[in-house]
Length: 157
Image 1 (spheres, rainbow, N blue to C red):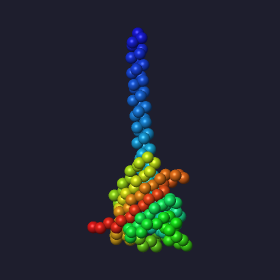
Image 2: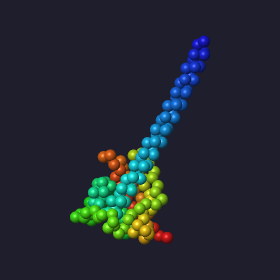
Image 3: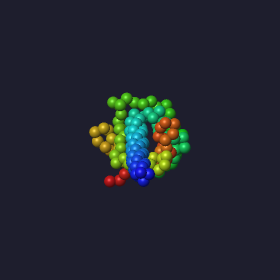
Image 4: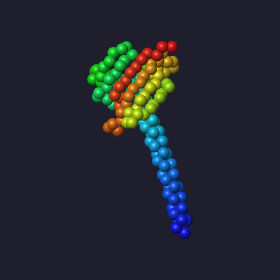
């Protein structure tokens, strides 16, 4: 009798352990999908904001300690980047000449950082005129993803 009760107890514990592990792995996968979607949404909002020239969206996207390496080979921080936005106001979508988009987006996570790589597209909405390889390191803080490091390179065909 003792043996039967012990065996039942072990079976119940095993089933509960497997159930708990299943729930835990499902929760981790859900959390990963949410993080992935959150970074993707941040990128899309930024590209829209960059297209309309929104200083507010730029300010939210770039972290204070940003290191930006441009495709022209210059390196600068957020302060210099934001100086170029001073005095500008966003333009109406129908007045946008260059729309920015993203192709081949890859998002990976290392601890609390998101590693973002994609091909930036620039065009008039009908045709893509140029492509750049872009990569960035983002951190989640103050309830948003912000870029700590960014690198842009002209894509050659």
